[in-house]
Length: 96
Image (tube, helix red, strand yellow):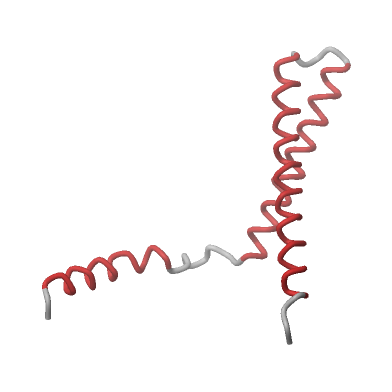
């Protein structure tokens, strides 16, 4: 056996556990649920900060930061939705 092949096999064996799923890490459904809850919490926090700013209880810096976070969250969700729709359309175009 070549020394380089042996080193390659050892490196592969060392890296393999990094790609295996973590026990108890949950599935894709849990990841999407967590992402949806984080998105809802971000929007709720921005809304609460906006209401507090309207009554004069929050500083303008906090309002701008909350609005920027909510804008980023919405843009991310829209981008993910667009990718899902694009993938669905690609599946529909596949020959059966």
